[in-house]
Image 1 (cartoon, helix red, strand yellow):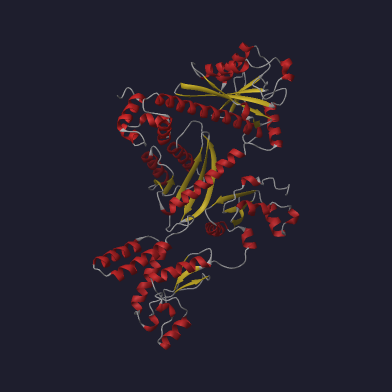
Image 2 (cartoon, rainbow, N blue to C red):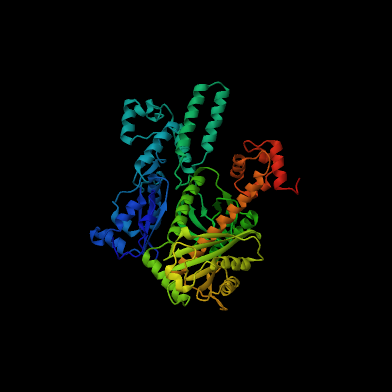
Length: 623
C-alpha cells in the first residue's frame, strides 16, 4: 500500500462488478482509461507499494489526483465504453501503454463495380463506406456473418473473385447462401449493387424499417401460401433483429440525450447523469443531494432537472440536448418542457424509457446510482482517526470543555400533526450504539417545541447525579451524555434548555442542527455556527441527525401501519392473515384508505361484501 496516494478509495468502496475506470490529474484531465471484469481487483493492483509498480504505471499513478469508475453490465460493454472514452479523451497514458493496433471497421467497397463487404483496420482507404469502429474483431465478424444471410453480397478478396470468375465456378459461400455469386453471374451487377446498398443502408440507419418491410413481405408470402419464401423471410427477420440487439453503452442511432437515474432513501438521493451524444456515452456525472423534505420520485426528477439546467443557463458546460430520459414523469411535465425548450432554443422532450437500448442504459445508470448512494452512506462512518478529528472539531466549534464522547440526538416526526413520535439515537466515540436507541410516543402536544420539551423531560429524569456517574452502567438509559442535539433551530434549542432547567440539570451542552443550511444553533445565540463544508465534524453531526430522523420516521410509519392494522382486525371476517395480505397488496395505509371497493376485492380472500365493509370502516364519510 502506498501512503503517498491520499485520494485512494477504501477497498470496500470499490465495486466488484465489471466497469470502466478513469484516472485524473489535478486539473481534471483524463490521464488513463481502463476496463476491468472486476473493478475492485483491477484498481487494487494500482495501489500496491510504489516501488513495486512498473516505472510507467508508477508515473501515471503519482501524477494522478483522483480515480473514478462507472459500472456496466458485462465485460463486453466495458470494452466498448473503454474504446469510446479513449477516442473521446485521448488519454496520454493510454497512447503510451497500448499497442499500436487499430480498431476494426466493417467496410463496403461502394466504388467497385461489384461491391464487397469486409473487415479492415485501415481507416484511410478510399472508395469505402465504413461502419464502426468495433472494440474487437469477433463482434464484427459475427455481425457480418449474420448479415450475409440476409444480404448475400460478395465478401471475398479480388484474387478469389477473379479466380472464380475465370473458372466459372462459385465458392462455398455461394453454396451455403452467404453470397449471391456475382462472379458466375447468378445475379447481375445492378441487382448486386442494389443489395450492397441495402446492406449499407441497414448498417448506417440501424433502425427497424428493413425489418418491417421484410415482415410485410413475409405476411404476403404466407397469405399467398408461399410458405418456403415466408420461412426464408422469417429467418432474415430474426437475423436482423439479432444484429440490432446492441449493447447498452452504444445506441443504434445518433441519439443525443441526457439520461438520469436516481437512487434514494428517506434522507438522501444519489443522481447519475449519462451524457449521450451521437449514440455514444460522452460523459458520466454523479452527485448526492440531501432531501430537505420527503419527496417522491417525480418530485425528485423535477428538482434535479431544474438544478442541472439552471446551472447550464448560467454558462456551465452542460448543454441541453433534445431528449431527456428519466425514471418517472415529472409532475409539471408540460411547463418543464416549455422552460427547457426556451433555454435550448429548440424543442426538448422529457420521456421515460420503456424498452430497448435506452431502458437498458437506464438500468445501468441506476446500478451506478445505487452504488453511489451506498458509498455515500458508508463514508459517513469513517476510521478512528477521522472520528477523533471530528469529535475534536465539534469540541472546538461548540466551545466545549471536553470532546463529546457520548452524543444523544432527538428528533420529532408526525403526519400533519397526528401520530406524533420522537426518537433518541446514541453515538459513542463517533459510532452508533443502536442497542441504546429509544423511541417515544407523544399522545398530546401543541407543536414540535412542546414535543421536544416532553421527550427531554422523560429522558432527563433517568440521569443520575454527576457524583454517581462513576457507578453508572454505560449500557443503561441513565448513562450521562456529553452533548444533547435536537433536530431544529433556536426554538427547539430553547425548548431543550427549558427542559434541562426544569429537570435541575445545568451541566449538559446542547445544540440544534437545522436541515436546510446545516446551521448549528447554540443556546442564547442570535446567529448560528457555520461549519466548513466537507469537514469531519459537520459530516458526523449530519450523520447523527440523519440517523435520528430515520429512526423517528421508521417508528412513525410503523405506528400508522399498526393503527390501521388494529382497526382492520376489529372487522368481522378479517383475521391476521387477511390484514397482512391487505397491507402487503396496497403497500401503505394511505393507499388502502384511498382504494375503491373493487380494488379491495381484488385481494385474495376478500369478497365484495367484505370489501364494502372494509371501505366503510376506513372511510366512514364516504359510505
